[in-house]
Figure 1 (tube, rainbow, N blue to C red):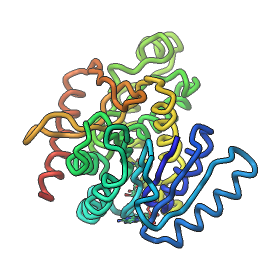
Figure 2: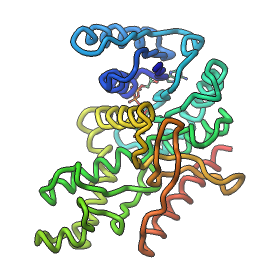
Figure 3: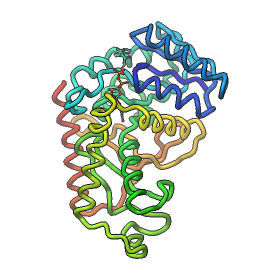
Length: 310
Ligand code: NAD
């Protein structure tokens, strides 16, 4: 399995480590317009191979070297600085996606390749990448709210004193400030979240839920404030997605992909079954009226951002 990563900054380098450590790829190709940075990352990660999986890792300075890639991960572009939102990156990163996607497509097998989009603002970048690549939407996959859902599960795990592995709770919509928590479909093991709270005598009132939503929305801002950027969480999410594709696991992940056409075209995150050919199916979870309205609002915000750059 050959995987290429475009953009070897904080995120791309961490993604390379996490993907290598899945033990599922035999070749990793790293490309960055800053060739020195990519070469240094390949060198450093190559040394790590002595302690784990022996993966062929190369830094390249042209796109021909990505030929034969099964998966291409795009993690290039401007990142948020303190005080910036993901949407602030829109203009700069449209140019980055416009630069990268045609070059990628000129060198991969369009019948097989899966594109994983990481660059922010995520959902709009998925829309652009899908339009530029002309690949089926099922094979242009944004990490979407995988990370936001992981953050939610981590917070709930502490609140409920139960393993994250037993929590099925999803953040949906935009990977951004308008994302929403789908409380109505949340379950812990085999019981609904509400039943779990009743049975364990844990109180999770509306005010606490609001605070949790606020913490999920603010997680990236807090991490950026503290360490300049975020990379560990997203790297783990990408590696999980890569694992799901390579092993054809058909797990349910909240990834972002394009649906609809023309003025109805939109990418946002919903629970989707992911396998070897990318997105296999999209599920419609149970939602109350407030949640449905929040999801629709999130979709409108993504579409407005997309239209603002046409
Ligand atoms: P960074 O500044 O550390 O690295 C970005 C890299 O992209 C740089 O090395 C730069 O040289 C390279 N690059 C820029 N334009 C390029 C081009 N046209 N071709 C090739 N390489 C190019 O930034 P980072 O912290 O690694 O973040 C990268 C992106 O990932 C940002 O857009 C950030 O917002 C996003 N991100 C997404 C998530 C998510 O959940 N989807 C999480 C964290 C970060």
